[in-house]
Length: 167
Image (tube, rainbow, N blue to C red; front, side, top):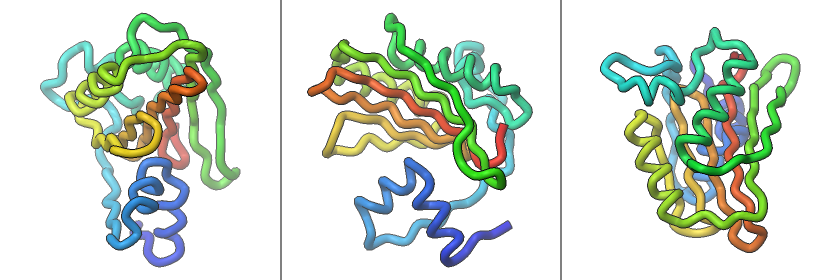
């Protein structure tokens, strides 16, 4: 299915990763190509990468939530965040969303750089905006991720959202 016009603009506006790209670069056109492959780990991946790969469409809510917690442990090691897992969207387009929050602890910028490198190694598309709050935005096969640190409030948030209709 190809989305064009207002429908495509709405899909970009609703996506945390691509809406940020669009807001920063309104002069460019975005073309999003749907990946019909598995959301899981591809051939040749290490066992460590398999543990924190985006969940496949067939995974249960509990499995998705566990994978996100494992992903936090890989990206922000040695910390214990609070977790919230929920469904968001409309009855016709639902997303599973997990938000993990660490409050009262500053994290180093090297942690965010290492997280970006780790995600690239796991074949996520990664964007590290140069301005604004220190953050890493990533997308892999429709699953979006935002890891944001707010230095003033000493909060770090990881939000991972499935594609519409998944899991």
